[in-house]
Length: 245
Ligand SMILES: Nc1ncnc2c1ncn2[C@@H]1O[C@H](COP(=O)(O)OP(=O)(O)OP(=O)(O)O)[C@@H](O)[C@H]1O
Image 1 (cartoon, rainbow, N blue to C red):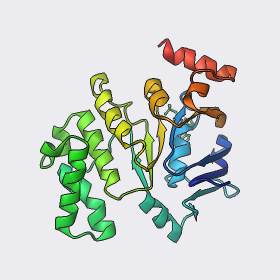
Image 2: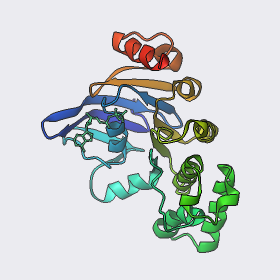
Image 3: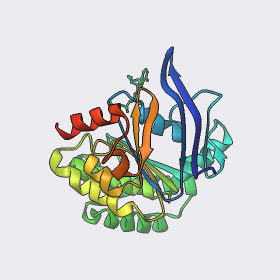
């Protein structure tokens, strides 16, 4: 059976270096999947392929909601359904917080200004920063900026949200507030694929955890299986290294 996000024989090269070595993965609608693994294992590259921020081999296929993620017209349809949150927030510095959230609905959807503004304010309230709406991003803390980035992604009402190490650039005291917002999103129907080093979060929130190593998926299953009783020696080594860190 094919999932809402269907990844088939995903291969990618940087020059001669094969960074993804044939990944097969089916992700169900509304599922929360956490991707873990050592640095350089290909986690970010995998999720960046899902909305084709990265090209991949011609013999590979990714489908989102039945739409092939290929260059051309279908890519715009896919990108309208897939939101992304980056490690480094990537907010537009010359726009206020509210304008950041309004931008895509205004430009892509042609949402009338008043409606886009009302939606932005609703989303900013949902991520707990309604009072920051008129500020510019540089005046916000990292945790607040990342919550704006999540609100901005939600403004397009995505079916799928990709998170690329969303808390890795944050000071430790701000990690919790961002994870809380993500925790509240899980189970609301949006499909979430999260590259993370936060094992506690993954074990609480993920429906499935994927362990990647060397461009392959070595282990996949519910958190109590992959994190609690890993089968592969490399998964065990990785977990003991990060948990004893
Ligand atoms: N643009 C690029 N050109 C060449 N090699 C790249 C490029 N981007 C990534 N790589 C290499 O591909 C491999 C996988 O990178 P990727 O960022 O997907 O790993 P990752 O598992 O997300 O690692 P991390 O946890 O450190 O972010 C790494 O060896 C990296 O050096």
